[in-house]
Image 1: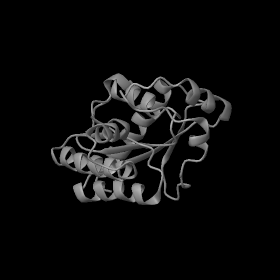
Image 2: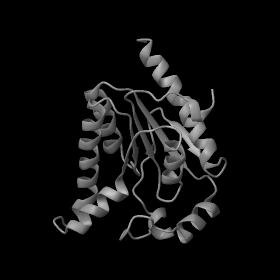
Image 3: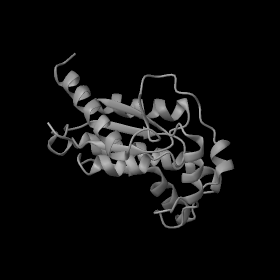
Image 4: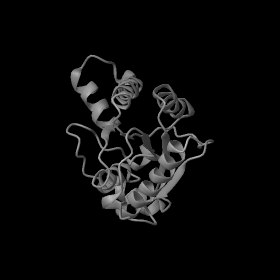
Length: 187
C-alpha cells in the first residue's frame, strides 16, 4: 500500500519534537500531504499569543503548550487525528502530551526529529525563511543553548540529515499503521 493510499487512523496523537530548524515543519507538511490530521504548530500558537500582547514574554512558551494540549484534547475527543509540531524539549512537556493521549484514550506516536549533521543544521538555522508572520528566526547560538533534555522514553527517531521529508513521512506513516493495528487488535 502506498503512502498516498494509506488509511487514516480515526483518532491518534502524533507529536513531532526536536530542536528548532531540524525539519519538523517540513516533515509535518510532507506527512499531512498523505495523512489528513489537525495540525497544531506551536510556533503559530505562540506567535499569536505574542501578537495579542496579553502575556509577558516569559509566559508565552508555557501558555502556547497549554493551548495546544487543550486544542488536541478537543480534536481527539471528536475522533480526529492530531499532529503536533513543537520542540517538546523537556520531560514535563513530553509527559503532558502522554497525558493528553491517555485522557482521550487514543494511541500516541512520539517522533523526535533530528539533524545529525551539525553543519547542515547550522546552515538551516542561518538560511531559514520564517513562514509564521512576525516569528523571529533563532540564531545558531540560541539553538545550541536551547534547553533540550535527552529523551528517556521510547520514540521514533527521524534524521533529516539522512532522509528526505518524504522519506521521513513514509517512515512515520508506517509507524502509524503499526501503532493503530496494535491498538485496534486490543493488545
